Image 1: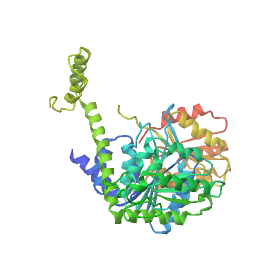
Image 2: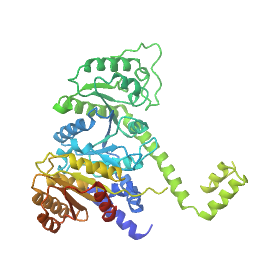
Image 3: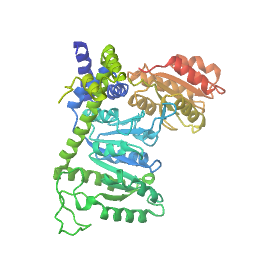
Image 4: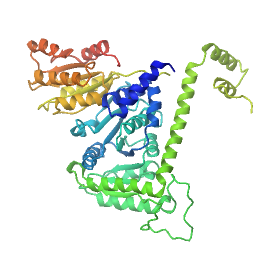
Length: 345
Length: 134
């Protein structure tokens, strides 16, 4: 690493730590576009992150996630929290472009110096959360944001990954989409910490609440500690009691909101804070953070290997490819050679 | 395998003007041309637009105004961006704008002005030629 890059890194680091939005935004852009200077600076930023409360928000398109988030920004600002928002929308498979419209519902808070909203296009990540999205969270964390919301569309693997990154996962539902619950049951529904029934003035809100309660009563999570934990099941003779709370067990809560009328927002913010307190007091925060670090390490290894492949001498690769074509070697051996690992155990 | 850099564009409607059909068509046109477009909705103050442009680290800000207040509003966005060290962001404008206002807008830092009748293709081509990721 040259002295020049180190100076650039130090400058970016200092600006970000001082909460400089312009510098932070440029860094995020650099990470999205894979600029080497940004990657270098990100290494330093990472060491200064890890304090913020990360909240994932997911749900079907039109459920009201952005509107709800707009209300939550206001509520947490009232509580003197500095807020970051990462809003993710899909990239068009056809054109590679994206239309990012989540900000519309949050623009009211845009000029508040303690609110930083950043839209990200998914850029076709295959079944997972992008490095850019996680790093955007780290940048906002290092800037000193107290709470960071990550909003995703309600379909696909990215949402389940978000739950690994988030301390608290919110799933937003609306009455009248009962079939969607069935559809989502096996995915994000299992990892939600808080269910939000938005547009609760609509017919069917209570029915939805009841079917969620029923689902939770029957879920393995009720008898077992969540999958985030390594703790064993409760003893078999203990009858399942939906109302019982163990101090190290979180039964996902269900809250009703009408985001458009700002109803139920205070209670939701309270619940988000209560979950954070639960995570701290039960020791689960540390577990979730370990899980996050593990996920990020896996992603980092993949990225590193990919960039190592790009930098590998082409003549060397050509020789290997020739050997493959002539069946002189096999794929596994060739791959191990490229990443310079011993080819024999 | 290297990810290509994408041009990021903020599309906004400043001031008391709710006519957003045109601006939405432009936003979609940009998306379909492979750009990443952030749309902030109607009734935005110049401050909101400038702050959003900075938070989103965009290369281009496209402003639409059909109310007649373009001279003040567009210039104010340009001034605020410069003031906050984001003078390198390209600004363009469109809407119901008298031809004689164009020189003053350009003087204020609006790089190009698109009048009614402009095709999407012209706007997209201009952008491809004049804006690159920063």
